[in-house]
Image 1 (cartoon, protein in one colour):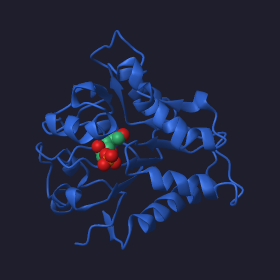
Image 2 (cartoon, helix red, strand yellow):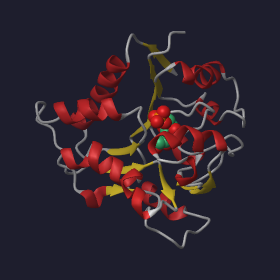
Image 3 (cartoon, protein in one colour):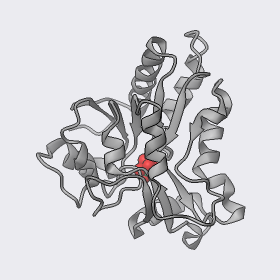
Image 4 (cartoon, helix red, strand yellow):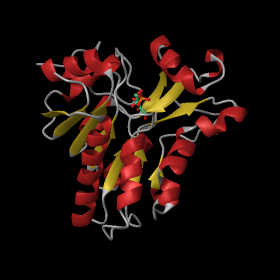
Length: 240
Ligand code: F6R
């Protein structure tokens, strides 16, 4: 694990973007695992601003997002993670949207309990080369909430009160926040060849500290599942 405690989230985001662009330069068929939320936004901006300058193209890149809400009310479609990714990244780079994947469509009504096909699709595409992660205050990665199993795969989950509260900032009313999501599992994430975890702000300190100090997996802090990943880089503006 490499931990970079940097001065600003700007600096962290630039480094994260450059890792992706450097890899894209070497491999035009890159498979990216992507996160939503406020954390990666600045990094996506850097990618948008720089890929053309570096003469790079996303046309052969495939992406797999970590998660998507289930049961989003129609007037909140703009809060879907599909919409977030289209707006914050996909519409502004030359990616083929057919190559951009989500574990479930936010429009889906008949949700299943198992989404093995998403993990299979990732495998069929050669696995994730670079996985981008944010982290929840409660240590969740993707929507693997405390209590998630190390071997968990992509699945339907119930969001915890703490996550619903944290996400309510994007909704008019906390009751409008979806209570369920489909998320890649801890095992699905761990299988990524390279992981970049971004963490900004003091409210993430406890979770990041748990990961940095972990000697084994602690179910109460899902982020600790990454303690022995062979290529994990943490980029944070929290000073340790
Ligand atoms: C988003 C995701 C979540 C977020 C986490 C932090 O796809 O998987 O785990 O990364 O909830 O959210 P922000 O970045 O909004 O603080």
